[in-house]
Amino acid sequence: MEAMKMKNPKPWQLHPAFTQRRLIKVGTILWKARLSAAMGAKWELGDSPWSIGCVAYDRTCHALTEAALYAGYRDWLSVAKTSNREFLIKIGGVPLRFYRGDPSQSAPTKYASANLLELFTIQESDDLFHDPTAYYRLVVEVDDWCKPVSVTFCQVSSSGHVSNEWQIQVADDVETHSLDDLREEAVELPPPSVGDDLHKTDHRPAVGDA
Image (cartoon, rainbow, N blue to C red; front, side, top):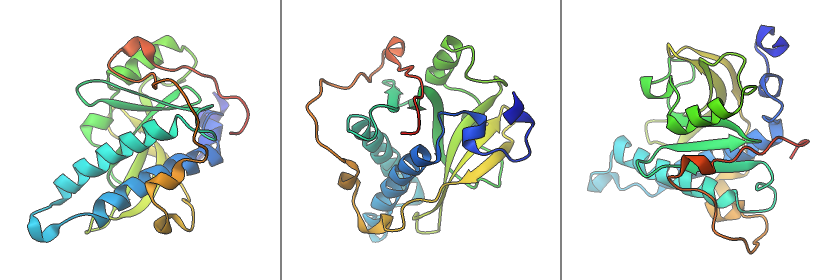
């Protein structure tokens, strides 16, 4: 509760699961997915910010799902999704979602409220939120060519008000590496527990600073 009273609290003061290292790793995934989609765009063939955004969204979801299987991620990162394309990131079991936009502006209506996956996770964990109408979000800002400009962690209220913004400093050499470089160690694992079953969402607690 004390974190909520602070002026401009850091993410880890809002919830200990949101360590700086974890947010940098997730923010880097979002950045790389957006950059990959923008670099592959064919503007002369009719690609648009909408179509590039769709590609970026799919690549982001895929990259996060893949990263959750590998060492350096799997102890604290998990995802859940449904057949109608709802997607949820969980860091140390705490849910958050991402969208493209300007963190200085109000959040889109779609992201000012919880989706089904997020609601399910919140309802199962009484201590996740001190304010059930404030949700954690990652905002990816892009330029006119759909290339990423920033990735910002924030909270969004049900009215769309954005607060407690914290810009994630992605790796300095992020533009020189592909999405495949996120795989730190290949490991043999059973199929990931993601899909359209809401009851299979992950509630692993945060343990230390991953």
